[in-house]
Image 1 (cartoon, rainbow, N blue to C red):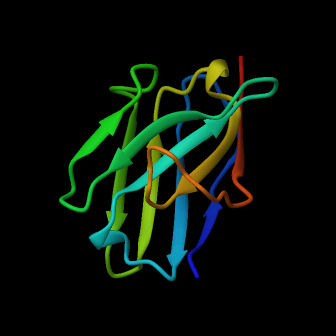
Image 2 (cartoon, rainbow, N blue to C red):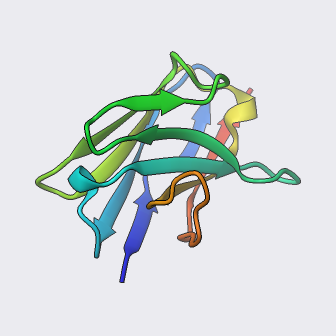
Length: 116
């Protein structure tokens, strides 16, 4: 059974940085594409980015150049480094397992709040 536990969220001022973590069990992150989504209040969940099994990354235009996905294979953990945060980045962030394009389960997420 796949379990993904997100952590690292919090309150940060605009222009600041946060690093989110996604500790995985029941799946080997180095052998799978892993993704991040987010959901802002009143909005649908939206794709943030993905890291493939080969280590390639792809991001939504809204975060490109500011967010970076990486992984630590030894810790079986995926990270989302978020820099130059904006108030519109405020959301609950979720880590997802394959199929990344159509996730079929969601963890508890981690809240990120960016103040202006």
